[in-house]
Length: 282
Image 1 (cartoon, one colour):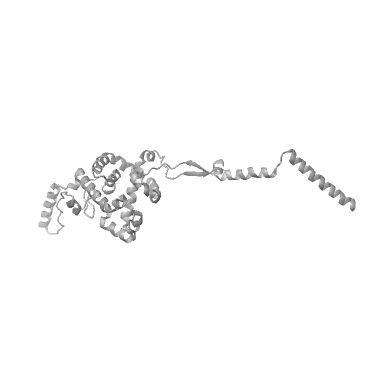
Image 2 (tube, helix red, strand yellow; image 1 turned 90 degrees about the vertical axis):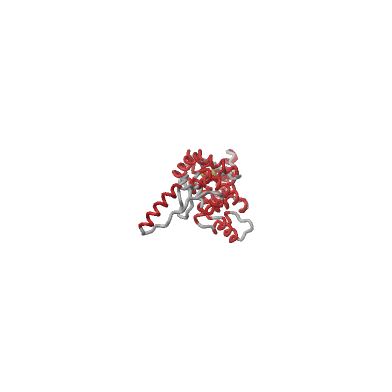
């Protein structure tokens, strides 16, 4: 029994000696082995940028990027045909509108209101009675010196009145309505935007909202926000849904048109595209 025990001790000592000798002979430093292994794991989980974001916001909209980027990205995907069609049609109208807007220190970005308001159709009349390229209401037209056509008479069952109405309609078609004149209506719109700049703290998005729902509704929303100098984002939820969408579409069109070449080439990237290195290796 004693001999067996001594043999076991001797055998264990010999194995330990051989392991240490082998480690030294091969420079097998276990602490140095572990570090590369850990580094390898970290390397595999490191994020790699495949494509950098390249969307550029116009200067007057740079502060809206965080709030609107997702909306603009979805708009660019879901409304691509509309954007291409509008951009091409706008080539005829935008430069002329921008030249007039510039005279009143209105940013060129407001030319896209032509697309949002009338789709470049000078004869369109809204259900609310707004007319022309810039969809100007009667009261506003008169305020800014535009001539407006006489309103059509209401439909009557009486044959004589129907005949009179037919004559009135024919006469109205011959009447001049300056809202259907591109140059005159654009001057009026530029003056309106200039005046809104004066009483809406120079906030271009608030001014855009006022063009859709009226300055009174914007003032009411500003008051309800409880803030001294609220931005559009502060009052957004107090505005009509149509107006909220209108302002967001104003932003979307301008951002896409500001990056149109990249958009048309399917090369417009809104956010960095990243992937894990381990995914790339698979």
